[in-house]
Length: 106
Image 1 (cartoon, rainbow, N blue to C red):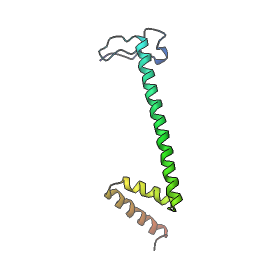
Image 2 (cartoon, one colour):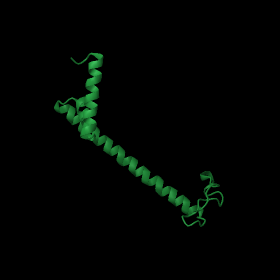
Image 3 (spheres, one colour):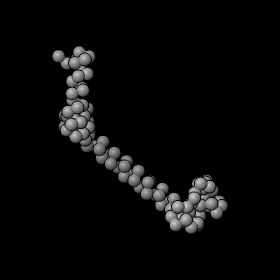
Image 4 (cartoon, one colour):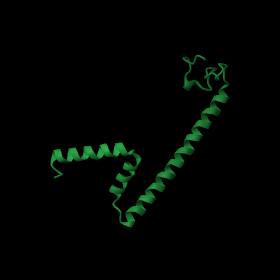
């Protein structure tokens, strides 16, 4: 494996110090710049998609609330559905134990 201890990303394109390729050969600075730009563009596209999905979720939750459902309980149901049965049962048992301990149940 190639040694990259002397690599400084701030020096990309300003010197010949660039991270080596997987086979240890020097990589031209322009290839590094292209690779970095490609990563940046991919993340930017994913962030845009993430925002679109977040907006869609907000719209659906608005429909839920508009239909008359309690949004807090709806969100709790989402969390519970992510858990497996054993985890849900453990959570319920702990909630009951804590509730009894502080006097809000029975």
